[in-house]
Length: 294
Image (cartoon, rainbow, N blue to C red; front, side, top):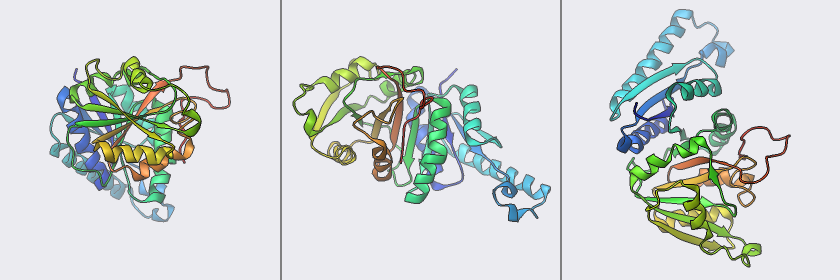
C-alpha cells in the first residue's frame, strides 16, 4: 500500500494551497492524499440559523462534499475525500487510524487573530491527539515545489524521533534536498564547545539519509525567532523543520512565544516533527505530548 498524507481541508485558499503542496511533497513516494473536511451543521455553529431545515442542511453537506471532490480532482496522483461531522481532534484521530499517514497538513491564515485561534483550538488538539508530524502551510507561501533547500532549527539538546517521526525518513530522503542546521547560540552558551554537535545530533537522530548534504548555520546572541527567520532568508530555504518535544516546544531555548512568532512570520511551510524526550519523563501535571504555543 502506498504511503499517505492527510490534509485538514476546508474551502479556503490556504487549504487549497496546502492540498497542492502535500501532493507535490508526496509525489516521489506516490503518496495518496486524503482531504479531511470537518463539516459542522450551521445550526450548531450559529443557533440563530435554527430556521435552516434538515433538507437545507443536507444540501449544505452535499455541496461541501462536492467542492472537496472538485479540489481532489485537481490534484496530481491518488486522492480521496473524507467528510466528517466529528469534532476535529476525533475526526483527525479517525483519519490517522484509517490512513496511517506520513504526516498531517494544515493551512495557516495570514491574520494574526485567526492564526492564534487556529494554533490554540486546532493545531494543539491535533498534536496532542495524534503525535503525528504536522505540516503548516502559510497562505502566502510560494507555489508548491519539491524542497531543494531545507532548514532544520535545533535547540541546545539532542533529540530522537518518535515512531511517527521515524516514518518521515523515506519522504525526506526522496526529496534529495540539501539540509542546513541552524542553532541559535545565546551568550551563556558561548563557552560550551558545541561546535559541530548540532550536525552530529541530526545525524544521530536518523531523520536524514546518511549521505544527505548537511551544513551548519550559526547565529550568536540573536532572539530565537529572529535567528530562525534570518537563517531562512540567508539559506533561501524552501521548507523549515522544527523539532517538537514532549515538555515544551523546542526545549528550553525555544520558549512558548517563539513557536507562534515563527509561524506568524515564516514565508515558507513549517514541518513540526515530534521527538521523544531523551531525559526524564515530564512532570505529572503536564500530561501527554503537548508543545506550548502562544
